[in-house]
Length: 409
Image 1: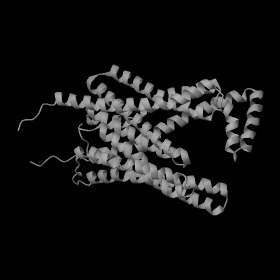
Image 2 (image 1 turned 30 degrees about the vertical axis):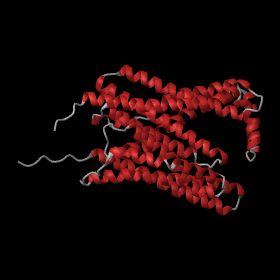
Image 3 (image 1 turned 45 degrees about the horizontal axis):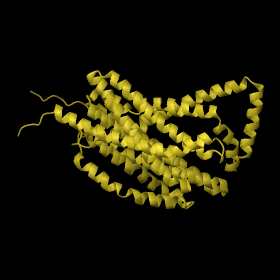
Image 4 (image 1 turned 90 degrees about the vertical axis):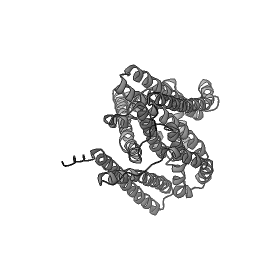
């Protein structure tokens, strides 16, 4: 009797395609931005040199993202070729990540020094930014999945790549489409009123005349940024609509692996990896322009944002698998509501902190008071997310020890 033919690894083929397309897109983008930066540098214009620095930093970012996509491509290709999977020891991953975190203060100090070095920051800061972002994300993911059912390296890198090249770009696309719809509504409203058209044209001319003067631009925008209706619109969009979109789409990898019969603990781990991929891409692009004295606090703050994304996506991954396997759809709805509220509160505190910093001294005293309290609120939320992540990991480990009896012998 002939042995049954082995099934073709369709999942590995799809993983290889996603990884290859992501790596190729990032590599082509890096080449394009590098050529554009060199052309701007060759022009000799001082303003163009500053723009060239941003493009060089973007080149680094895209190159690093293409390198992140390579392990997934290699593991998937090995599976397609019928080679044995790479071995993995999950028990030592947290130890390695914890040891690597000892380098984080050194990386932050070096990055802060380089952020003030002008043109040197274009070349040397982006790799340090990748470490400043990646080290805490790696450590938090290992904390989230410590002693939970371990994934193979192929699945781990595959989930991370799916988040980097599929779910996160989809989130950005949806948010851009929504912003364009809001812009179209605003253009339509302005076009229906001659007075609004004249005011908008006058404001546009003033903005164009002030492009080379950041302080003049800030003076133009400051009355709008302290207007109660503008603040309400910002809070409604950034603290209501954006969390609804991101928390629904971040754990798309859980949907993609749903047919693999994930356990709730496995959904928790897939969600944590998805949140880490989202935070990595979001943070690398937010740090693409060196900010001098503000770089250090932005890098530390983005680590807190990474903790938020990992925690909320991990909870959603657990809730999705629980709903599919146990029919806990009420739990899914409650967890989705909770993570949206947590994300929205985080965004609200961040918005208030930024608006208070932009307001003139003595202007909008209520806003400035809230802005002064916002950093403490963000610190409390970060601590809450950390406690929730550890507590839920412990809860899942206890549930596994109860449901899986020890094997004899």
